[in-house]
Length: 184
Image (cartoon, rainbow, N blue to C red):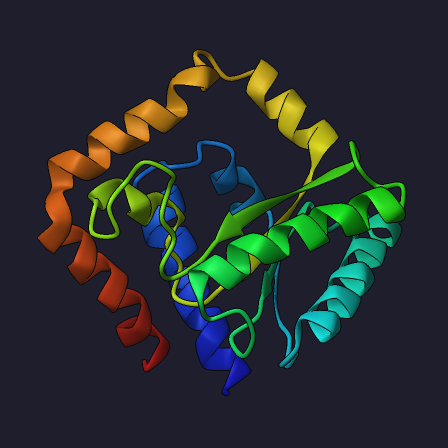
């Protein structure tokens, strides 16, 4: 797969959905300051993805200029349920590397589905990305951002309300626009 097009699609998702709709009020500053690492792995197995994840965590440890990493893995874990199960291995790697509490991994997938929702429920779009990815987050930075943001505990509910107000057709069109942007 063309890494440049994949990154363009994911960057468009960040710019239009995450920042544009303010789904994550902490993302804009890091994007503007060029502190978000977008990287694509050619991993085709879960083991290869774990190895890449370990390397990316090491890079975050070594390079403080990177605030957060979006590890995009288009060729492995296309099935959401397999992806969801893999998250336990990813979290286990954090523990094994003694990085639990230093980093956390947020999950995003094209077929993301929250518990107690239907596959077509519009709120699932808050975690739907053009390609499966693992978002590596520095916990200390996240805690600092949350402490400085009023009513941060209300962000998920606000996002659900916003996405519901936009509706499924609008969200489907926005989702398709990520791929269209990658072709330009």
